[in-house]
Image (cartoon, rainbow, N blue to C red; front, side, top):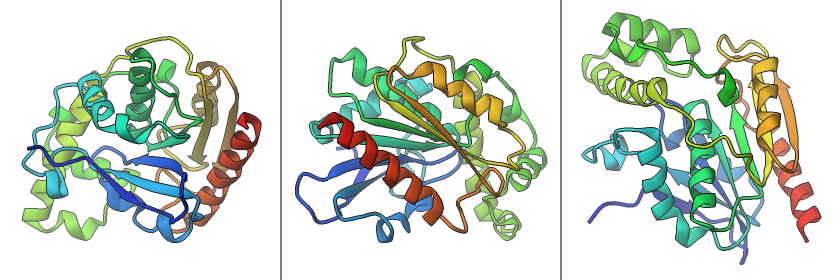
Amino acid sequence: MKKSWIRCIPGGKPNALALFCLAHAGGNSSLFRGWRDILPDDIDLYLITLPGRHELLQQPMPDSINQLSSQLVDQLLSYINNPWAIFGHSMGAVIAHEVIIEVMSRNKNPPIMLGVSSREAPQFHHSGILHQQSDQLLCTELIRLGGTASELLEIDEMRNIILSTMRTDYSLIERWKLSSHQKIPCHICAFIGCDDPDVNEEQAKGWEVWSETGFTLDVFCGGHFYFNQCPQLLIQKLISYLRGIMKKTI
C-alpha cells in the first residue's frame, strides 16, 4: 500500500480550516515545519511530501505535473469537504494551481484561496533544459536561488540525493503545460521577494487574470526564499487574507 503524501498537524479546534502546503523544486515539507507554531489553532496545517523524498524516497515521481496533481487530488478528496486553502512555493505554486483545476474538473469543493509564492503567472512560463545540464551547473543554480546550504553540496551523498530530486522536479516543471485556461473560483494571493532573480512584480501580478473572485500581491524583502529566515510576516499575511475571505463567505 502506498504511503500517504499528506500529513496533518492539527491546530486543535474542531472544523478548522485546512491549509495545504507544497514546496519548491527539489524541496520538501520541512520548508513549512515551523509554521504550526505561528498558525492559530483554527487552522490545520497539512504538509504535502511528494514522491522521491523523505519517507516516500522509494516512490517514483509521476511523469508529468498533470499526473502528479491528479494523484494528489485522489488523496486530497477526503480532506476538502470543509473550507480549505492551498499554498505553493515556486514549483509548488504550479502544482497547487493544477490541483485546483483537477478538483474543479471533478466537481468537488474548491478552495477559498490559492497562495502562490515566488512564481510567475502561467502566461509567463517558458520551457527549459536545466534538468539536462551538468551537476556543476545544477549546483550553481541552487546556490544562485538560495535555500540550499552550500555545505550540503560539498558532501557527495547529500549532493547526489539533492541533484537527483532537482533533476526530476525540473524535468516536470520545464516540460509542464497548463491543463486548462479556465479561471479558478477562489482568491489568488501572490507573494514574492523584491530581490528574487527569477520573478518580478509584473510576472507575479499576472496571476490576477486567473481568479474569478479577487487578487492580492505582497512584496517582501529578500530573494527567492524571502520567508526562510522570518516566516512570521508571510504567515500573518496569509492569516489576514484567510480571515477576510472566510468572513465574506459566511
